[in-house]
Length: 226
Image 1: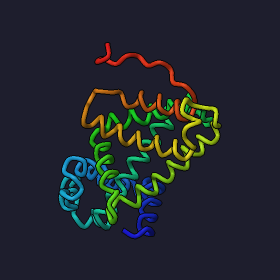
Image 2: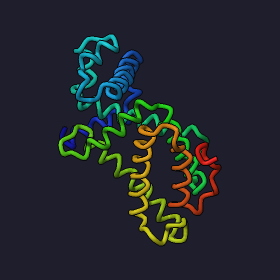
Image 3: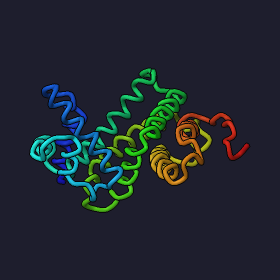
Image 4: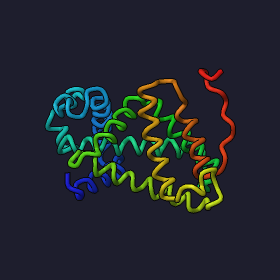
């Protein structure tokens, strides 16, 4: 996909999921939900548009009316995942003023939501790994998404000041943002390979406090440390 195509899909998915007739909205959402499950279990390459249409109970032509290609549908699935995650954080009661504590709580809320939707999170982890290759259909969307994340985390690190966090003197704001994004992606993969070995939401919340706020509180011992 060209960048202009990616921008168009992002705008539609993130801004217009609620547009159109109620029937059209339901059909579009059903397509995205079924595609998410199919991509997560059968892989992106191993899933056909026709099989997704059959699972939704619509004609192939109806599917193509909403999403012109499988690449476009993949971007829609990833965008839908991000929209859903944002709603989880917004509904957690976190106020507009972001502090180290509310930031950690937001991280915990979003990571918990990711853990509860294991199939979609696994799909995202696979796409992140595969999108390192030039020409991958999710590459430009994930680059766009990562830039937003980098801007947020770097900005928060700068606002927190050089005195915050045990590792603040060691890393720049840009480096701390890159580290946190990488740790989050890596922990999701680790948890998929070693279910239950660590508690990703709690661990990510503590890491956020260390990088962007201040010393994390002593954690409760895990089951295998007792």
